[in-house]
Length: 248
Image (cartoon, rainbow, N blue to C red; front, side):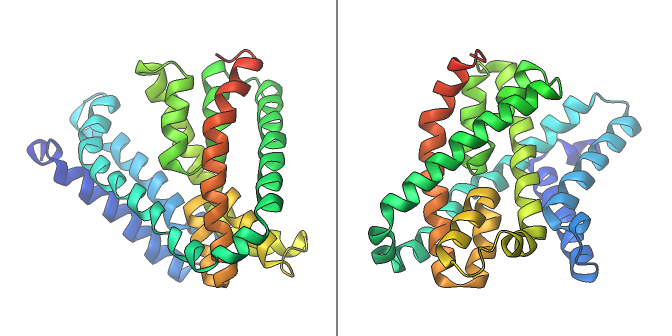
């Protein structure tokens, strides 16, 4: 068994297995707590903890063994994110027409979000490292994790920060995928395809963009452009913001 755990096949198998279970549960019980990404994350952590206890190994060792294969799955995240450029290209004329409105809205929204994240981190007494990890969560995982690691100073601190950021990004995506339809109705965005798409892409990242594409082509294009622009804004603004508030 330990021989298998030391191979990359272990990380690939566990990732696919827990997500498959999540899909089965969500198909049968389509409620928030059974969303595949959420179930996969919780179940994966639980399995690693159980195996660490069974083999009397530190959880960090089991995670490192898993990560060597899990990173192969993670590699596909970047090209998958780039695939969202297809609906964006199809609606490029719409983007050209409303580019100023789109850019200014996303920039204002991100700025407000950064201040809220910082003050809530202080309110709940989060550590400096946890506060840093929360800041880049508006970007998709492929962008947010490296930014988080750099702001945290790299090394072990960077690894811990990027792990927390990954969890925050996934939770955001899960909430938006599960409750996005209701939130859209509550904020009266269902009559505005541009606002709807921007909302899904900004808050739900790749998962939110996939949901937007299900609703319509315009919504999908706006979600895609929001992911691109938010990624660029986060890359530029978050390090500066972290310095201004004393986190770097």
